[in-house]
Image 1 (cartoon, rainbow, N blue to C red):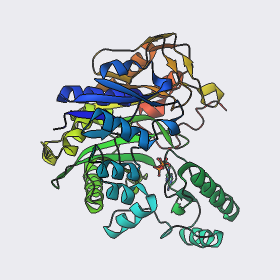
Image 2 (tube, helix red, strand yellow; image 1 turned 135 degrees about the vertical axis):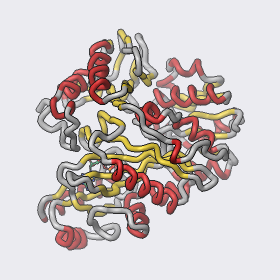
Image 3 (cartoon, rainbow, N blue to C red; image 1 turned 90 degrees about the vertical axis):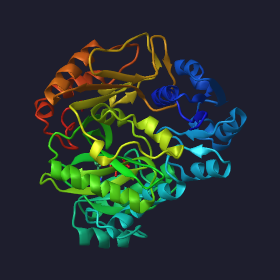
Image 4 (cartoon, rainbow, N blue to C red; image 1 turned 30 degrees about the horizontal axis):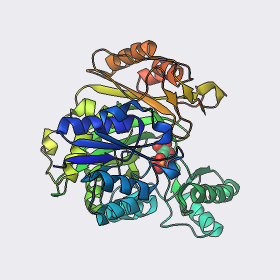
Length: 447
Ligand code: ADP
């Protein structure tokens, strides 16, 4: 097992990883930017190293600075968390050449599945269900038109390197296709320095259902069931739950097998998530694979009892998985809401600043993963998520009731948050009935 790990991330996930390391008896080194020098979790780490100014490009995304910190502190591995460098295969390669363990998949696997177009090609080869789409990257507007006509409108134009809902456009006709094609290319170039886009049939009113997998270096791969992440704004998740309230056991089994097959074909190791869209007939289609731990991993931990971050570390250290597929069971229901410092009444404008008062909810089956506290100032440089509120109970109905109580109890003053929106969602009849799709929030949001 590793003796010391460097955490190349910030916020709640940095604290989450510190917690896993402590329980495994591993020392932690956490890097931080000047904007995070007051972060409270720094005192829980054995060492903390400032790696540069607030903007991520000069700190959390700067490979040379992070590797220097790793060399100075003599760590045996780096945990990248999510976002930042977590899916950067070049970073994983640099770690490898510096003989530092990377707690994530090998760079070759990330390259293969991290690109949506190559993941589609691989999935097609092994017979995983896909939505109709273009065979490869679209070279020109003419090619985009030809493919759109073959697939039939509506279609989604998607960036191969896409993530975070960026580089995606919906097209209903030739005009919106051409406009969307150019806009998606430009957005993808700006966000990912890669303008490649492809087409996929647009599915009306799908659910987003994803499978958590764990793969060790000995060829064992298991899945930990699914998460329903249909409640989204601009293709970004806001509320997640496990299990998916409508998934038939047979479909869960098939989806799990498809996720494992994709991971195996890609030579995937460590924790990963295979994302699908589920149509109203219960058919599922692969959309992408995320080669890292996900924000919403705690709901899977709550229903399966598996500590995903500890498993990531054990896998990276070369240990075989300590359980088999037959040992995995899903118990009860867990829901997570993402509490963002944003103003839902102002188009979800980020609301950084000082939190004057903070008191998290508690009680049975309640977990709050957060790094903030009364008096904490949210820096403007990073993602606006400040807390994840996770509730686990035996039934979905009880989970929703407890979540409603927790949201009422949650005190966050000084900044605007998404708590009032979550209260509306939890009170909504369609949510209570489990009647979800990716358009759920439309009509509920202020115009
Ligand atoms: P990203 O990597 O940017 O998160 P994804 O491919 O995972 O992009 O898709 C994010 C969301 O966009 C999905 O959960 C779904 O709501 C929507 N989406 C993606 N592809 C399609 C599609 N073909 N049809 C309908 N909705 C889609």
